[in-house]
Image 1: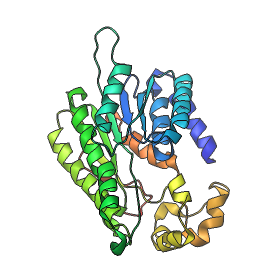
Image 2 (image 1 turned 90 degrees about the horizontal axis):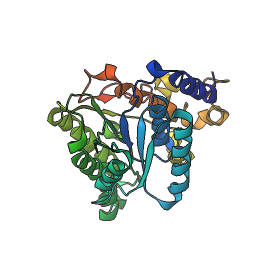
Image 3 (image 1 turned 135 degrees about the horizontal axis):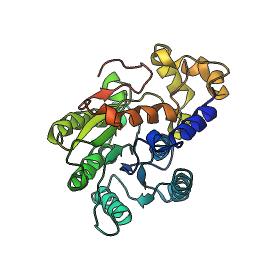
Image 4 (image 1 turned 45 degrees about the vertical axis):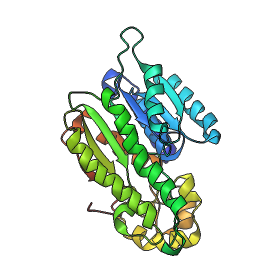
Length: 301
């Protein structure tokens, strides 16, 4: 089954009835929800009946985010709130919560609950030690570490009190694999994983808190990487069980690129599926974990 057919089938199956919409009526915040992994997560949630607060940062993302939100509303009978906010700023994360509350609170009772938070927004710059500077360090840590912390801080008053909440932090294999030129980026993701474990304890009566650790993913960011970067990663990719190319199934661009990359990256739907699994009711006994979303590139935490 091709990727487009897979996506359509998932959407059709999840929209076919109430019992097939396991997130019916819940509210989720997805940061960096305008494209790539974030947009795929939004599509996954919407097909399951979840209302969405979609965050984006740059003006260039305004139109695609609005279009995505409108499309999901029409196709899945959900409500959405689109919020422009910089997760790297001091006030941006709280602004997301405030705008979500204004747009999705109950019209009569004023009740507002955040059932799911996906800390997906992130920035990555690869630099060797000699080229790392304070500005780059500050930017990556502000977005990738401080942003999720401040978002959680703002969201706590609105989390469930029955352990039904779900938080998923999007980390990376970079947190533990020690890739060259990722002193800063890898450090931010390791910090996010450390916070995942702390939050799992602090918020145990409110929600589960887990992280996922994708490897290469077929996004605009991956598409902009050089052949040299992909070749440097190829030894890892070749040893990733699920990265082997499947002709006739995988996109032709990945088939053609196999000599450089050593295999295929994840599709965004692959990552969204793992996030969706962790946000289900059935995942209620899983918390404080870093869950594989990398095809087996990294087996252990």
